[in-house]
Length: 241
Ligand code: CDP
Image (tube, rainbow, N blue to C red; front, side):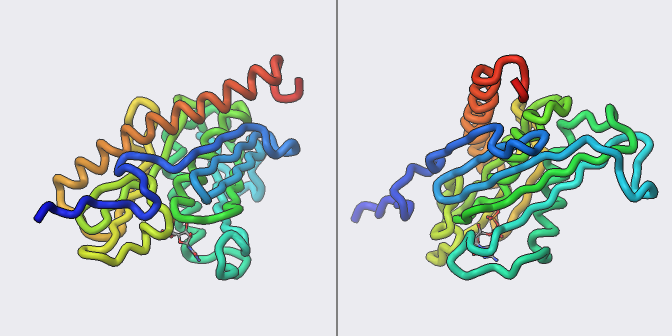
């Protein structure tokens, strides 16, 4: 009997991302902002700063501090989420800082702080990656000097099959070995700035997951770059015309 072919719940190919939308300049009062959505996951990032860090004892005389705040809004999922910080949101905020810091020239702004507020308006898995993608674009839009853009995607293992950009139904996969979730962020020249792993996977498959993330991040980078270019052509002469 022929082996049953693996089917993703939404019929995507293993290396197929969900439909992506990206837009820059979505929060007029912020210094920089962007929206990034993949399928039903929608993230909005707003950047404020660089501005003087207060209280003063938190200042770093050598570089600016990147302060990210990841938040899932209460009605972003079917079960209402209790407002305010949680262990999960604090962890994701920290990870977002670590994923983005390597490309930011923070040394240009001693004693300052750059605040990045990431709101997940709607969640269907992959929110930390969508948040990082939006934040990266928003920082570029704010004019913060950067060595490159960071792109982020989650690679998953559903039973034994590797796939990119898991949705919630896939994250909850229970057949066979269940689901392994591997969010990965990288620069446009392929340097990994963030790697997490939730589940079990062997060494070879990790290498394959990284290869798949590289291909997916290339596609995401092109979309981020297009959105930034689109904003620049629509607003020649800078953010405020
Ligand atoms: O969103 P991401 O995959 O980065 O992080 P996760 O902690 O693995 O969460 C996966 C998904 O679970 C989220 O995207 C939401 O769709 C859902 N979730 C939820 O319904 N309620 C929560 N309190 C946290 C997550």
